[in-house]
Image (cartoon, helix red, strand yellow):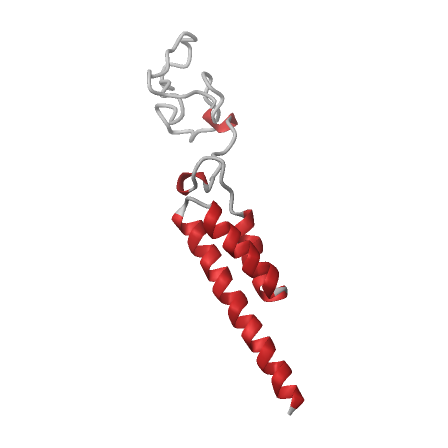
Length: 122
C-alpha cells in the first residue's frame, strides 16, 4: 500500500506513514497534515554523496601525492621530484605524509636499481 499524502510504500497494517507521519486510519480525510519535522518525498531525493573534503584544505586535491607514489615505483626520479614539490605545496598533514612516503619509496627503488646494475657487472 502507498501513503495517500506522500506516495511512500508502507506496510498494510501501519497506522502512520513512516515517511511523512500522516495518519492512515482515517483515509477519507484528504487534508491530513504531516508532522512538522517530516520530509515528504525523501525517497525521491538524490543519495548523499561521500566526499574526502573534510580532511583537505580548501582547493587541495590528492592527485599530486598519488602521482608521486605511483612514479616512485615506475620512474623513481620523477617520484622524487613530485614528492618534494608536494611536501612543499601541501598544507594538509596527510598529503604531506604521502609525499614523504613517495620520496622514501623513490630513494629505495633507486637504490635497489643501482644494486641490480652493480650486481650485473660482477
